[in-house]
Image (cartoon, rainbow, N blue to C red; front, side, top):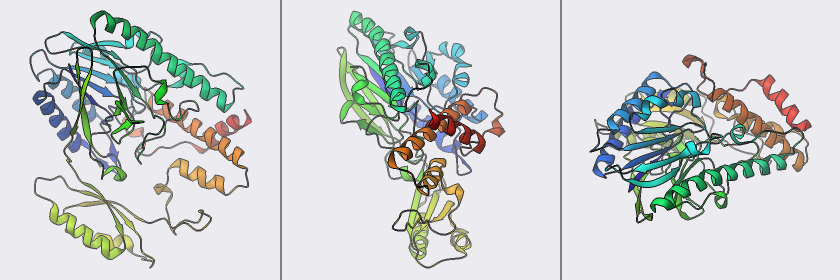
Length: 439
């Protein structure tokens, strides 16, 4: 039995005003070819199929066409399991679930109170049972527990950890019963941050309740655990069988130096036999150029010289580290790149911190900062003890995560009303923060 593990496609992503449609189309074509060549029996997508709860029409088209094409990759087609992620709307994923089931596709958008619905038997191309899957998607706190007034942050964290662990154990026990009867391996999934996981700029921290990371020891003893959410491919705590496949294309500039991959997972005789990392081609270069102005100019010329006619236009971030103030930095860069076959998406100055760590480079814009960074800087300006600062930071992270969950899972948000950047109304933040700190 051969399973392909992938995740975090983020179809429909707009990257600093640019669509990723070309890259995603090329990736899905490559993935179909890989599935054919490698004789894959089943594909597991561990969350974040889409980038927003209301994806653009072309993203939905890519998704649906991939599912249709997947059934033409060989005799009997290839089984597909799609798990919901924190970016996915459960309603959007489930709207076509019944129809897609006719195309050998299982969609599990959210954790359910009926755990047997999260147990999926995976079959090979000859329709023989090859593995049993614990199909666990992104778990929202409301999916597995009820909040209680007066609970402290530690109480909430422990309650959520217990609820998530119990949910995994319940689904695993049901899967194990089927697996033992047929001598099959058990695969589990998840869409979360694990303790020690390496994040990137494009990954939004998951604060489910007050839990920011799930310990590897809390996973069930499955033969393989296919994870999503972190965009850098990695093992969890050096466990060979617990893996993040990572995103197939770089979703932020700090990912541009990391190789992208999907994982081929082979099972034989009821157990895991081999894991093979298959590198995904780089369909478009994302490059971060750093240094003084002259160094950056030389880097731009070199990058342009390396581009072939068939390559997609490279996208560039420029971080200027120059002690001399350049008043017309933007026009300087535009002059250099005017005739070059590349696009500069972001130009900023390197942030220079004072000894106190609070004074930033002149003219830094609010758009360069995440909402968490703005809050952290404001917090540093207040005369608070370490415990109070920690409680406020935890409360802020919790309410932002809850508001983001509400926005992503909304069913009736017009496509053109979804903001590209996270936006949280100040009045809502203030009120919810006050409620959390008072508790």
